Length: 218
Image 1 (cartoon, one colour):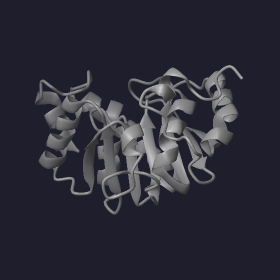
Image 2: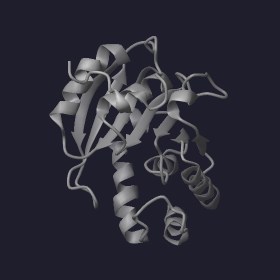
Image 3: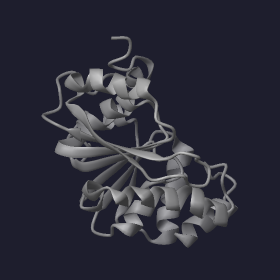
């Protein structure tokens, strides 16, 4: 990971405000590797990292889990290009970038798409629980898990997910406290399991999961 952090420090286009290698190790790498507390992630062979941004947790997990195939899902071109440079610089052979909206990529099956193709989906500091569960559901195999990195627990989000669960085929399994890490006073991993086939109507159109989260206000 040192070469990735060195690139983060020197690349003016790096998509992160944290670029000092020592601090980035604590803020990005150590935080990412906290996901290894979850057995289902340690044993996953196909992982999709949603909203991968600068490549965390996906790149750190790819290095830690060399037997896993890690896809970094990101819709913003400059972030995709940075992650591709990082992968090439560090020689991370088991990671690749999918520069697309998750909702669109989940509409088709492999090899061109990601529908129902992953044992685990990871997401770090991106969206409400019901939103990320909706995005993850079509990407997961039945029985697969979403691991969501979140800060302070918010009961309104957790209740929202509970209400949305039947429409997502996604059930909360456990919440594991792993923090704090630099940059986060609180760090919890929410583990959410896919309990059946992808429900009809998923994925919805791009952006709808964020604008109109299922389970809100009911």
